Image 1 (cartoon, rainbow, N blue to C red):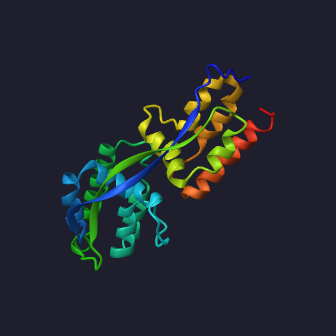
Image 2: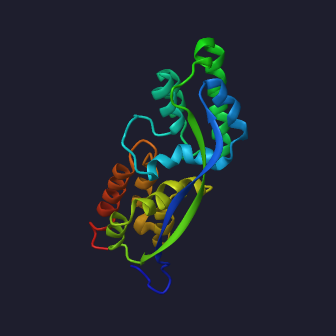
Image 3: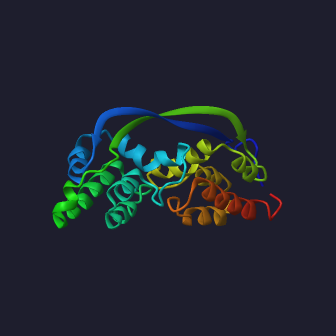
Amino acid sequence: MDNRETIRPFKFMECSLLPLSTGIRVQTLRELRAALPSVPRSSIYYHFWGKMLRPHIAESEYINDFASWVDGSLGDTELAEALSAINPVTTDLGEIRSLLEDILDGRLEEDGFMSWKKSDREFYFIACKKLMFDTGRETDSLRNFPLAVKTASRESFFHHFLDARRRSSEGKDDFSLWLEQFGSETEAVRRRLEKVDSYLFSLGELRNQIVSILEKGLLKEGK
């Protein structure tokens, strides 16, 4: 049972990415590869995560901007698939940059023509600043937690589930970390949350999965 004197409430935060121009733009794979070492880490972050937060009309099956541009503007589906295979959830931003460089190096060695092919649509490197806001919403109840997550904003869900896994040295989301204080009572739910692949689905699909896990695990026993 919950001990209200010791349970730390879950406070819902919200985040927003403020785009910042880097002034760097490229039209070919060689230019893309040459630019990567000098762009700020926040640009790598923006081009892997920003698409989930900014409103857009779905124009590509790929989540990160690098893969989308290579496929849509250069027509290199093979390279786009290789770039899309990078999972930013469990990879440091510095490692992501290195992986991008290695993949591009391999492709440039294979195809001389494609390396110089110019795209009609330039790739603009965008950096970003993450802004945080306190929503004023909180709960300390397991029974109320699923609904609180379900009704949180997209920006709040992104911060607490996806971005939290990147921030945590153990790769844990904020929901799981909060549930730990309830001990064995929430162990099964935390195991299910841990197994969710957070980079294969849209933000809406991902939230539906998480809410379903929370509802089945926290409400079935009348907690």
